[in-house]
Length: 24
Image (cartoon, rainbow, N blue to C red; front, side, top):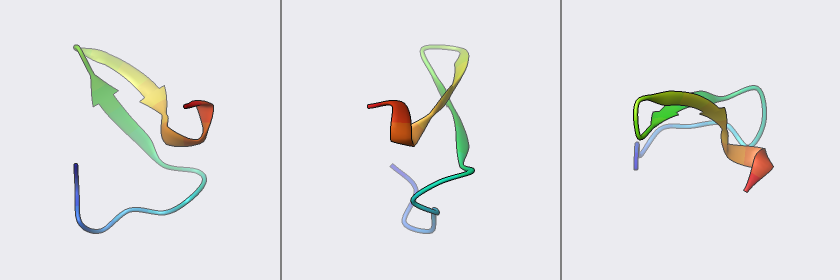
């Protein structure tokens, strides 16, 4: 988990797939 990230508009790679954090 990145220490610097936004609550929204943040796209991260999870299991090689780009997903949005707010989707969780």
